[in-house]
Length: 212
Image 1 (cartoon, rainbow, N blue to C red):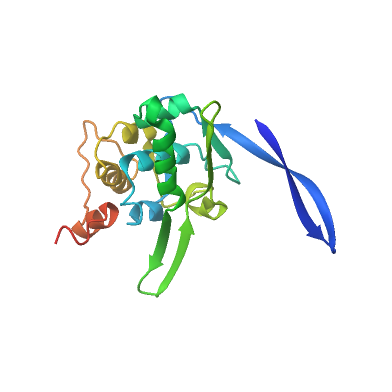
Image 2: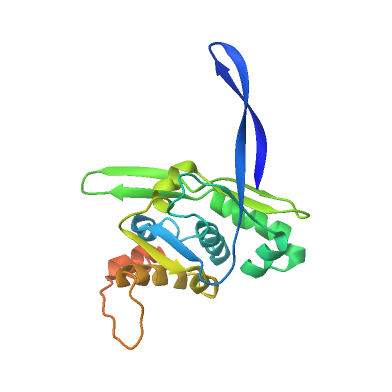
């Protein structure tokens, strides 16, 4: 679905107006949808203080980014579906959605190379809107595209349903880390072995100071 937004810009000292199309992509909640992210996003500790509902909404939105997309869309779902997916009572949805999106709109991540003394900071979302009678919408900051779009190597895919069923705020980042270490292999009749360091666990759960 496409909404037309009227924008104004300056060109050679004159006011020029043009139309930009905002493409709306409904969030699909069918089985088999995957969350695909760059591995650097998994290893940041900056997501660790998100509530479990904010983290689930983050993954729900990421799951509708396609690796072949060349831009982000505005992702939407109905208030009823938002309440169902985040396990929120409908009569508390307005206040709770405002709190959760406040977490996400204020969230920044830092990608750091300590040895080379380099870092880059990002805000994750650029916009969110809620209309109780219509739709809930979110849009990523375009600078986040390197973590979710056009991924060809060093990325991990996880079923969205795996995350949505979890009840502990630590379960989500630990499972994401485990999936990264398994490199797409699935437990079955064959045993899968991999190593996770204590430092890695501390990093993804934000417990660097708690587990010493």
